[in-house]
Image (cartoon, rainbow over all chains, first blue to last red; front, side, top):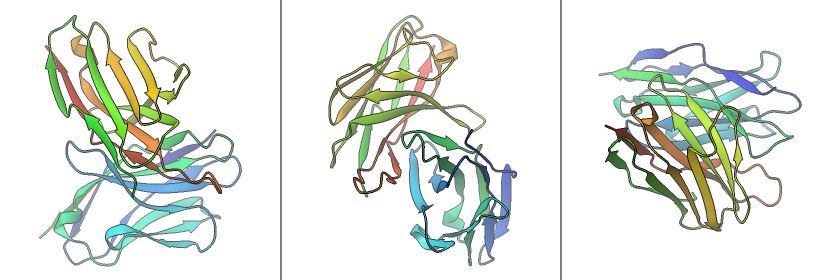
Length: 114
Length: 119
């Protein structure tokens, strides 16, 4: 069965510092991995995805994520956090056998303080 | 990116009434749309998969008669919460997969969500 885990409910970081939001996955077959961001009372916005190829994926708003097959992880990173990055972040996995079904993590609230 | 529009963004209704939420794909055709419910502790729960021209596929534990889904066209899916009760109060979000015919690796695009409050 496909699943993702986000071990941190909340991540606090100072503006200008690097940030990491963690995600680990469990899938059958090759994973299709995604990161989404949600601002209060809004839908989810797509940030980036890993399908195949380079393990380091670059996405929107300066975010990137590193796919690590041996550690089954797909952590979201940004070299320098902005206060406006404060939001709820979701990791998701979609298995190759049912491409319509996405499995979301429980979300991590990112707080970037000035 | 692809745009998904959801309406209304907020709705308040009395217990026992029905509420309809619309989800439209604005710049692409979506044969399949998805309805999620987001609980206060943030997690997203897939409720059902809406299929154009056929019956929706519901996830285990989701009441089909309570949450009616209709996908009448390639750009519109509706979720009707029938005989709503306070426990149905939640944030409902629709999504559609971006068309990617070559590899089926399209990401989901989400509507802005609908906050339902049942009094």
